[in-house]
Image (cartoon, rainbow, N blue to C red; front, side, top):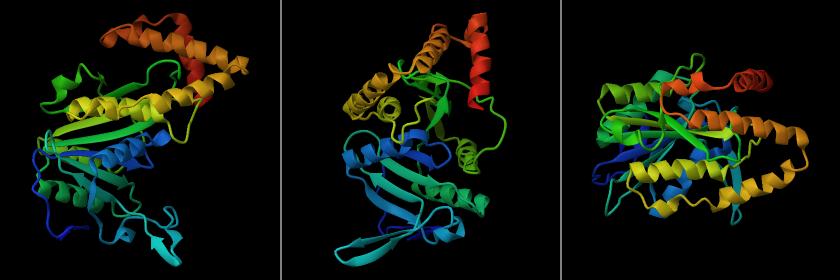
Length: 291
């Protein structure tokens, strides 16, 4: 079945209270936290493919996203990069749509319109985008998850994450037009971001993925055991052993801890104003170091 630029399976399931969980690559998926979280959910619920772009080359530059050739059982096959939609039907709780979105290089407005056309046809009730970013935070403290929300879910999220309006100004992704379209339709719209320690930069940060899953489990009424912290704790324990041999990094982490504790010790907008002069000086130094 063709819906706009996407080719979907011929017989669409009858969805109930359909929640979309999406992630955008490569723009905001540091540590592959969004990829890990979606993959874990898909595996747990036995997700099946619903569809993908009919002609991905319309939107993607294949010199940037390289096709991959593989040999399986003596036969060579070519996998072309694509934006893929998977789904899971649940007996209890909302049905789930997992949207793996690639950043487009061409016809960005048509691309976002095509995504919204699919979501409209499926009559979704909630749209959630997850991701990760590097920040001046220590690995010795719980991973912070911040975000924004529009719609009826906003009050529920206040007790789960640090809700804040973005003050960022600068380059961004054209895929943000999808979120704008969701807001215009009056659909619950949630953005979740895990803040990862910039000095670590793990290829796969399982602690960050676990933090996202903890919030998702509460938002979408998912089994809490999906957010298993074991792998993340093991990764960071191994990191501790390396840090003990680096006195400069140990001092850096101690100052990051001061800043983290100052931010999380207060509620509301006054927290930044209550930071000590030492921490304020440190933040300026950190900004120069990470730029």
